[in-house]
Length: 328
Image (cartoon, rainbow, N blue to C red; front, side, top):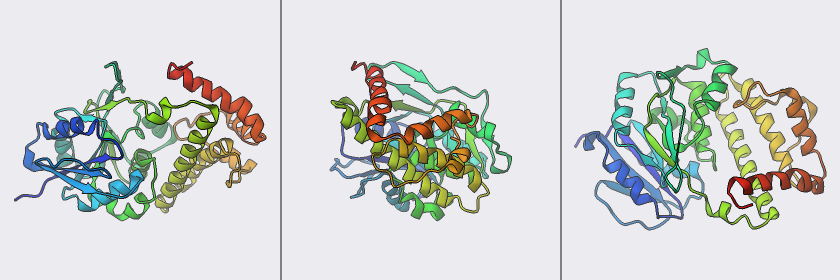
């Protein structure tokens, strides 16, 4: 029996209503069946299916879940799929061809179709031709365009990467809570050649989470956003540790400082300390040309007493979120 070239890892945590569709989208690929395997890592009981390996886990966070599955994967290439997303039928055939023809490429990010619960589509912008990004040629404008225009750090289900290139970073991956897509994308961007493909290969199903539907109070919203901002900041610290000796430590420190200010803004009592030196260094990679005064304004807001942040910043953000969800 030949070893599969691609291992598809489907993650399932606490819900099962969409995973059948996700699995079917993988099993119906145009790529020869012997060239890929399907692994489902989950904390819930799922029925056995032909050609699908179920891996049970007690892990809560995304990073250690995927790391556990990677350790059991037999393929040279890892393609990740969230349980509520879908692969288009030719996804794996295209991914197979890209990696076979580009031995130096370690990660491929494909554009996605975003589809909401009533079938309305929003499409990622398509490059005219595949974009090759190499660490030695990066600058702020290139990074900013890759992140903002082509959504490089968004959506786990749009990423495929070489297993051998992630193995030395598994201990870091096991610390990642929420930001798997950011961790993987930026890790490979700063260390290996990557490709942004020019073809839709997956579907991101836009589903409002139960936590979003149940935004019954401002306080609940504050607690949820504060939790997520802190988890993302912790993930970025982990990524910063993984990027040591990459040559991009100083650049990434700017990104980390920006998120440090955001954490302080959304905290009642924050254990992160931000000084003016951090503020002048702060710069989000997804907006490298952000005016310095806006960063300083964010810092000033983060320094307000909690009751003022709640009545001014949090309340405004909460109302905006309700409008987005048509709840106000």
